[in-house]
Every structure is written in structure tokens, then in C-alpha cells.
Amino acid sequence: MSSPQMRSLKAFKALAHQTLVATPRRGTLIVIEGVDRSGKSTQAASLVARLNALSGAVTAVSMRFPDRTTQTGKLIDAYLTQKDGTDGDSIDDRTIHLLFAANRAEAMVQLRKTLMTGTSVVVDRYAFSGVAYTHAKGAAGLDIEWCMAVDAGIIRPDVVFFLDIPTDVAASRGEFGQERYERQDFQEKVRTAFLDIADKAYWKILDARQSKDALGEEMLHLAVTEILKTENKPLQPLWQ
Ligand code: DGP
Image (cartoon, rainbow, N blue to C red; front, side, top):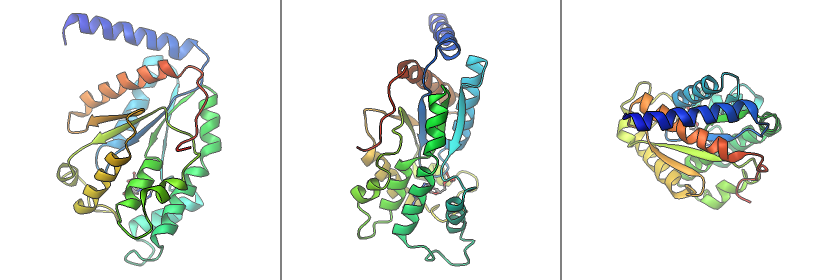
């Protein structure tokens, strides 16, 4: 990187530090989406660490969906890992969709509270996964509008980072294939559905094939830009 770029990155980080630490503001809701094995969880953890290192304080925390620790999450986990003793038909497609949505809805009070106390939240998967995975099943009645309807009204992210990756590259990564949805043909449909619902107003489509570090720096830069813009903008409902 050339020195003028270094200097502007340094100035940018200094401004970010000052703003993150000194200004009372609501936190920013940052969502990371993508197909399985696109690197979301690694990048979510790294983004929280980078944001906190930048501010020298805990100004960001992470969250993930599905949250497998709650009652709804335990049912979802049994379904995904097929520990329910069946090969997958124990919960029908509409019911599992509703359970995933309930798993997000039940976290909204805590999420709102965290944001309103000024902490940003980096979320690994959100309602967009809900729509993409259910719609990708291609079954009658699982159209995009129906899939969106049950998540309408949850907190709208300020920004969505979509970690885009060809599904053959994702499928070649470690541990692919362990859970129910991890089949490359299905993941291809999921990727298409994600790109169909991507809202240019607040989605950033990022190349997830680049190195972990390069992607991490790109996300940090975009996240800080978003945090600086959030100020005290009211939280908005999703899809309403
Ligand atoms: P993860 O813990 O991020 O690996 O996600 C678990 C799996 O569940 C993954 O294959 C994506 C899928 N998934 C996540 N959210 C939803 C949802 O709302 N609906 C459906 N049908 N699948 C989801």
C-alpha cells in the first residue's frame, strides 16, 4: 500500500476511534450472510475483534442465528444435524421456517437493548438466510413473499455483508457436508436466492475468495464507514 493511502487509512482509523469512544450514539447492526462455508463465522469474530481493537473498548459484540441454545434453537439443531433420528422429514418445511423466524424474533428485545446502549452488533446470519434456504427448497407455497412475511418487522440491519463465493469453492472447504443443507446443488440455489433478494440500498456483495486478512480489512473499513453514518438514526423495521 502506498504512503498516501496509509496516511488516509490512519486518519480514518483515528476518526473512527474518536467517534466510537467519544460520541453517544446507537450501535450499528451489521449482518453477515452467505452460503455454508463462505467464511461468515470467522469474519464475524474477526470484525468484532478488529472494531474493539480500533476503539480500545467493547463497542461491538457478536450474535448468531440460529441461536442453538434456546428452546427453538434446540429443535433447529436436532433438525440440522439430523439427531432427531430421521432422515429429515420430522419437521415439515413451513414449520422449520417458522421455527427459524421465531428463533430470531425471540432475540429482538436483547438486540434492541444492546444497540440502544451504543454497542454495535455483528450478526452471523439473519432473516435473509431464512428466505434463501427455505425458498431454495423449491416446494409449493415457499415463494419469496411467504418466506419474507414471517420475518417482517424485526430490526432492519444498517448494512449486510454478503460473502459471495462460488459454491464449488465453498464445498471444497473443510467440514462441508456435515449438516442437512450442505449439498452443492442446493447451495447453488441458496446463492441464487440470496442474490435475488439482495437490496442494493444496504447490501455489500464481497468477494469471499480473497485472503481472510484482505477480506477482514475490507469489512472493517466498510463497517466503520457505516458506524460513522449511523449516528442516532432510528431503528427501522425490516421489509415493512
Ligand atoms: P450455521 O449455524 O450458520 O452453519 O447455519 C446452520 C444452517 O441453517 C445453515 O445450513 C443455514 C441454515 N439456516 C440458517 N438460517 C436459516 C433459516 O432461517 N431458515 C432455514 N431454512 N435455514 C436456515
